[in-house]
Image 1 (cartoon, protein in one colour):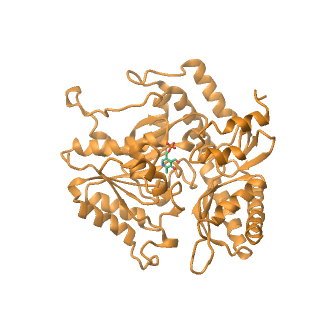
Image 2 (cartoon, protein in one colour):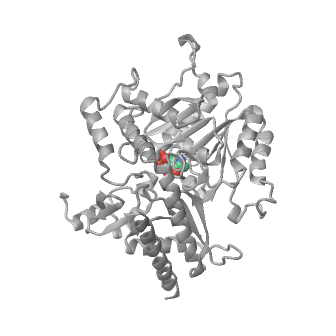
Image 3 (cartoon, protein in one colour):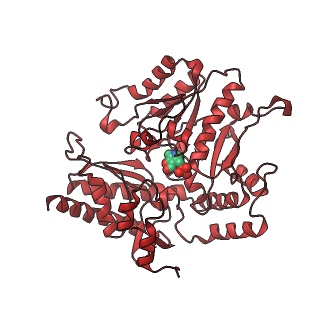
Length: 455
Ligand SMILES: Cc1ncc(COP(=O)(O)O)c(C=O)c1O
C-alpha cells in the first residue's frame, strides 16, 4: 500500500526531477510506478504496462526475480557494506573471477563502481594515467563520436555528443575531440556502405594524426550508439578498424558497453559479437539487473600492468567512489551473471531478438513510416521516416517516433523514443508470445499515430 492517494501522488510528482523531462509537463500526466512483476509494471492508477525497455536496459531478469533478491538479502545480513578505502570483500573477489571467466584471458583486473558515468569517467582517467605511467605523459585527449552518450557527469558528458544535452553545461574541460558517428542510414558524408571504405573510421585515424598521436590517450565508443542521437549500430569492419588504428597509434581503446554488455546483443558482450576486444571494457546497467547499483571497468593486462608497482612508485589508481566495490552490489552482480550463464540467456536473447526484429520488419509492409529496423539481440531501433526511399526524417515538430511511443503507452507498452527512433530493449526473460504481443501493439500504435496526424 502506498502512503498517498493517486491524486496526492500526481500532485507531488512535479517535485521530483525525472531524468531529462520537463517537470511541468510530466506532472500533468505523470507515470508513477508502484509495482513490478515479470516484465510488467503497474502505475499509481492501477494500469499495467509491458516494460519494453527493461527499466533502462537494466532489468534483464524482470521484476521480482527471486534468485537475485535472495542473494542480496543474504549479503545484506552478512556484510552489507565494506570499507572501500581499506578493504575489498569476498563477493567482489568472486565477481572478479566470474567476469574474468566470461572475457578473454587478458582481462583480469577490474574496478567496481556504482553507475555508468562513474565507470566511463574512470576508464578515461585510467587511459590517461596508463600513458603517464608508460612514458607518454603528453597523451591526454579522448576521441569520441558525435551522437554518443557516455554519461551525465562532467567528464562523461564532455566525451558525449549531442548538443541538446550538453549545451546547458558548457564549457567542458579541454581534451575531448569528436568525430562523426558511423551512421550508415544517414551517412554524414552522403556515402554508401561498403563503397565508403569506412571513411568514418578513417576519420578517427586522421583526427589522431591531426591532433598529434603524442597527445591522444583514448578512443571511447559504444558498439551500438543508443543513448545519444539516433540508433547507430557499428557497420561491419568498423570496430576492427578502430582496433587497428588504436594499436598503430598507441591509443587505448575503450568500449562503453553500459547498454550493449551483459547479454543484451545475444553475446555476453558486444565485443564478443563483433569479435573485437578493447583495452578497457566498461559495463553497467544489466550487470546487476537493476537490483543494486553496480558498474565495472574491466582492464586488459597491458593497461592494468601500468598500475602495478611498489608503494613508492605511486602508480595506483588515485580514485574511488563511496559505494563502488561494495559487497551487496557484487552479490547482485554475481547472482545475475550466474543466471546468464546457467540459463544460457545470451542464446535466448539472440533467438527472441530475431523474432522481435523480424516481427517489426514485417510491419514495414503496411507502415511505410518504418524506414529501417536495426540492432542486435534484444536491442532494436525502429527508424521512422517521412520518405522510406530518401530516408527523409519527419520534422522535429511531428516527432513520429514520440507519437508512436505515446500510442504504445496508451496501449500498455513502454518503449523509448527519440525524435526519429523508437528503441526496444526488453528483459531477457520475455516470452515468445509477449514478443508477439509487443509487435502487435506497435502495429496498432503506428496506425493510431498516423491517424492522429491526419486528424
Ligand atoms: C552508453 C552509455 N554510457 C554511459 C551511460 C551512463 O550511465 P549511468 O546513467 O548509469 O551513469 C549510459 C546511460 O544511459 C549509457 O547509455
